[in-house]
Image (cartoon, rainbow, N blue to C red):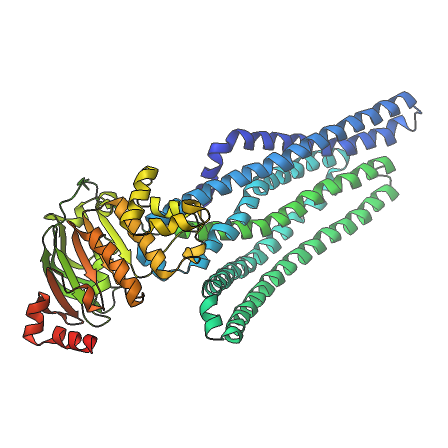
Length: 569
């Protein structure tokens, strides 16, 4: 874990080592001050060397000016190192998220993922800056203080340093408790963020159902869990700090007593004792710094561990010999395909069918039969458990994901639009397209005239998830996006089921234009949208129960005929 963390310093090592060099000089400056004080008390003040007093005062002033400049560098550029490392980690985790399968997002809440990327990495950034600096300075100050104090009185120094093992033991013991408490706190914060994101996203639903009180109670339940988790972490932290603080304060009392006795019996003089006391602060400061580091380490490494959990999640991967098929013809075949979600009950079992290029296949039947699952398997959002799916006679598991998905367009019932402009949302289908091509795609989707009626035209922002647009308008933008992509295979998954009849008629015209000369798979409950399909499969949880054209299935008087009869009535 530490090795993985350290590698993020590599791109910023020049600035990091400059920061460490400044920290080194700062430590030397802190060690110089007590020695100057000792010289003044032992030599220059008793000897009435006024000129040397002025000289040493000037030296001290120069040291403090240098310290000011070095502190500025450490505080500013040290934090810059941490922020840049945080940015690198955030880039890496975002890139990893793009490679993860849909099953990962099925198991993990959006708010929890966001908490790991934002909140956790903030603490990692602080550790990246302060951690090495605190360790380096503390070690240097402890060694330097030991040498300087031993020159005054070795026996007093050994008494003081003999208590370090006690501090280490106490810190290690409390560190384990802090680790567990901070890990729990991270998990609860992630849950609170996830629930908050869910509640804000569903605010229209809660208002429509008058469920504000229930939402508030649900949030309060998570909030109470958060308070309890933080209480436990702060309790562990308080025990850690108060215990260590008492030990260091006890050392000060011990040193004042021992030093006083040494002075009383003439083993050291007052000037040496004064310098020794000043050096004690050079001893206790790094101890306190190390105590603070332990807390920061717990925060930062807990966050880094959660970051690594995402980085270690198994990505969607291509086989080493994956091929780029270029522009596909569009023939699709399922050969004895079985599939289940996370090893549960099979959603599909030994499913087989073949769809020739340029033809339209409709999937109908009751909910839960696996129609949407079929649509998700073709672009390899999920891997089949058994069997094969072929595209132009090639197993899709042998095709690179980028190449496979470049040949497939999807228009679903739940259209997702980014909180950007209309133009950006259409251009998402082909970022390299010209403006003329984007506008042509909008015209073919019958949305261009509406866009031009907006105050800012194509530069109009659609709002989060397209909230400023109606369902039909969002659907047509999604269709325009698919036109711009221009794939040989189209999947329409309940693309019109959420629309009213008038809007559906308009959208259907756009869809008919979109699907012309493409291999098309249509999932629909509204049977009027599939009656013109080349073949219709009636799928239930027992597999394909019927197949044929609209007319042949009506004549057979089976499940489809009953569905049609119920739909028409």
